[in-house]
Every structure is written in C-alpha cells, then in structure tokens.
Image (tube, rainbow, N blue to C red; front, side, top):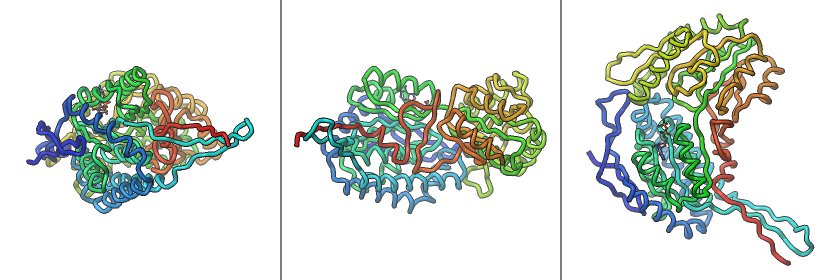
Length: 477
Ligand code: ADP
C-alpha cells in the first residue's frame, strides 16, 4: 500500500507510516500515512519561516485564486471526500458529505475575504498628521487539530491563515490523517508556493510538542482536549506567542414546560447523539422542567427506537461507531460511573454487534441525574447524555450555567420571554433557541467562554483577529 507522505518545504517525504483504521470495520485499512519526526517538524517550521516574507506580500488575487480553486475541487469531490471522512472517522455518510461541503464553503468564504482586506484611516488628534490602521499577517501559524471534524476544522484554520498571508505548519490528529492529506494535496495543486503550507502528520507528543517548543512558530491555533490546550497555553506564554484554544464542552439543553414536544425531542436527540455525540457542541446535559419531564423522557425513548446505529457507510445508518477503542472505553467507563453515582440508565448504553467488527455503542440516556455528578460535570465525548429534572426556568438557567465550560447552550421553549432571557443570560459563546446545541454556520463566529475556549473567535470575518496583527501608522502631511 502506498504511503501518503508529509509535505515539508514543498516536497512529499516520509517512509515511517501507520495505518489509518476504519472504526466501522477494524479490518479495513483506509490508508498508510507517514509520521513526522522532531527533525521533520523543525525542517517544516524553518520552511514556513523562509516562505513567509514572499507569501505575506503576495497579491490578494493569487491568494484568492488558490483558495477559490481549492473550494471548487473540494465541492466537486464531495462524495469521494465525504466517504473518506466517514470511513476514517465513523460519522455517517450524510454527515461526512455535509462536513466536506462545509469545508468547501469555508475555502470559498476566505477566498472572498482575500479581496476584502481593509484598514481604516483617521485624522490624528495632532494637526497635519494622518493615522492608518492596517492588519498584517502574524507569521508562521501552527495548526493542531482533533479527530472529530477531520475536514471542517483543518479548513476553518488553514483557509484564514493563508487568506491573511501567514505560512502554516499543520498537524492533524493521528486518528484521521486522510482528509487532511487530501486538502493539503488540493491546495498544493491549486498553486500554493513551496513552504507556505507544511503537513506534518504524527504524534502530538512528538510533532505537536516540537511546534509548541519552537520560537519560530508565531501563533498556534488548537482544537482538542482541555489538558493539551493547557500545554499549548503554557508553551505559548513562554514564547510570547499568540494562541487560540477550542477545548471541551458540557453543553446544556434546557426543555421548558411550554416547549413544543416534537421540537424538543428532535433537538435533544440530535444534540446528544448525532455524530455519535463526538462534537464539542454536543449536549450531554438535558435540563427539563418537571411539568414536561415524564412526557419528554418517554418521547425520547420512543424516538430512540427508530435510531439505527451501524456502519457509517451503510444507507439508513443514523449514528456511526465510536471513533476508536480508547474512546469507547471512556464512554463505557462513564456509563458505569453514572450508574454508581445513582443516576438511572433509562435507555441504551450497551455494546452492539454488527456485520463488521467496529466500536458500536447504543446511545445512552440517563435520568434522575443531578448536576454535581461526574457524568454532568466532565466531558465524555460520546453518545451519553443525562436528564436533570428541575422545578422551573430559573432553576434550569442556574443549572445550565453551573459548569466549568461555556461553548454552546440550547433551550426549547415557545415563550418569547424565556427565550429572550436565556439568550441574554446563558454563559456560553453560542446560544440556540429551539435548535440543537450543535450545528453552526461557517460565516459567523464560533467559540466559547470559561473553560471551553481562549482567545478570539474562529470563522467568519472575526477570524482576522487571530490571524492578523494590527499596525497603526502615523504620517506627517
Ligand atoms: P483528543 O482527546 O481529541 O485526541 P488531544 O488534545 O489529545 O484531544 O488531541 C488534539 C490534538 O492535539 C491532536 O492533533 C493531538 O495529536 C495533539 N496533541 C496531543 N498532545 C500534544 C502535545 N503534547 N503537544 C501538542 N499537540 C498535542
């Protein structure tokens, strides 16, 4: 089997490779992907540094054309790339294709942003002096991504980095190198000059750590676990570099007595279980007022009966497998913890056998949970959610906000008063009314508060806050 190599200083290199395994069928090897060494990573960083002066001054039309071509190819190949995504990560084919389309849209959006780079001019407070405020690229950007969105997250970091004139060293998650390799290949064929984008696949402790330890990486954008995020932060403070973190979530979804039951059930099931619950915006705390509690739980149970967990690529599958064995163990450990803590496992939670060997888990819903249990406080990152019963809206809001995280917060209600109050008072970066906590647009800001995020927002035009630095120039007329 051929090796998909790393891209370092414009050359495809690397012979030390690991297998990319399909979680729906562990006998299926998706491909072999190279692993970069410390030396490879240092060479990639040096190449990005050397490429920066020319790329940072490249014409906006050149950047526009490359990002535009990339968008076009991703969209033209959406079925093939979506299939690759589902095969390596385990989300359903519809989700895989949907995510691929989103990646194409993100490149398209930032292709447009290249043509909209703007500054400001103001008069100085001193006579005969003008002030210009412009944005310049930051330099070498280190991009470290997780496994749960194998194409969208690389896209929403690489596209703005290149759009604003930065050069890149990109390290995807070890579990899902396939889509990352594919978009780097597309970008290079779209005309990216040598060294502007470097792909260093491999281990976080080797490749990622080398990036964090390098004084030549001027900014790091990271999505992943809270523990690794803290490492990124500490190393970045050490090197006085810009950093941006997207980490965990423990997102609440509130259901009020006046909710439309169907809307509430659909949004809750989607939030908790679609994409196998492996989304940082997934809801794992469903906070339900007592007047609707029993009806809601019964309706969710009924809805779960029609949810099909199977091979991600099979037609009719609603939920694919868990991504790998260690994540599956984490999920089942928490299912055990929840029961020991006194919550009631109302539905699911058992391992499932399918035609092929894979990491299949029936979506697990706890009831009778309280907000101080570990299953309500710690991120599980699987198809496991807990229903917390509360008296009224005021208690629901208090419980929703009682968490170390603050990414996304949802509510199901027909009350304008409560919806308005919740939008204003939810301690989260994103609020969803009568919608799942997950599922965000590509042209508006994405990010959270408290333990979920650090730094400026990703996506949309707000991305320029991270990928550029502001210059203020004064000129005597
Ligand atoms: P997850 O639980 O989602 O795998 P991680 O934080 O472990 O979360 O991984 C997110 C990304 O961070 C991956 O690309 C991983 O390889 C990388 N990573 C892990 N450890 C380190 C490290 N010490 N330094 C830099 N990156 C790391």
